[in-house]
Length: 81
Image 1 (cartoon, helix red, strand yellow):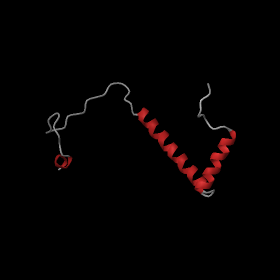
Image 2 (cartoon, rainbow, N blue to C red):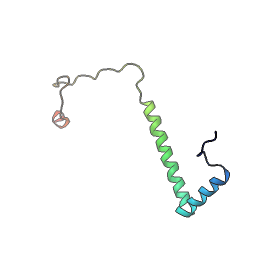
Image 3 (spheres, rainbow, N blue to C red):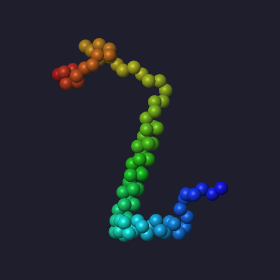
Image 4 (spheres, rainbow, N blue to C red):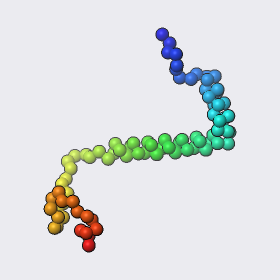
């Protein structure tokens, strides 16, 4: 059985393109495409960065700081003064 709604084919793409030209105007289409391309590049870079941030191997414990107990919450302004 064929699905009622599928991907647009041939003439349907032309109709969609004509609607975009009517709605946005021919002058705005390159700007719209450029913005979409930039958004996709940023999205790809951020998702790649997420997969690269995964730790490889064992995590090391942080070095103790003089005068601060382990697990103590410290205000950085007071500690650096």
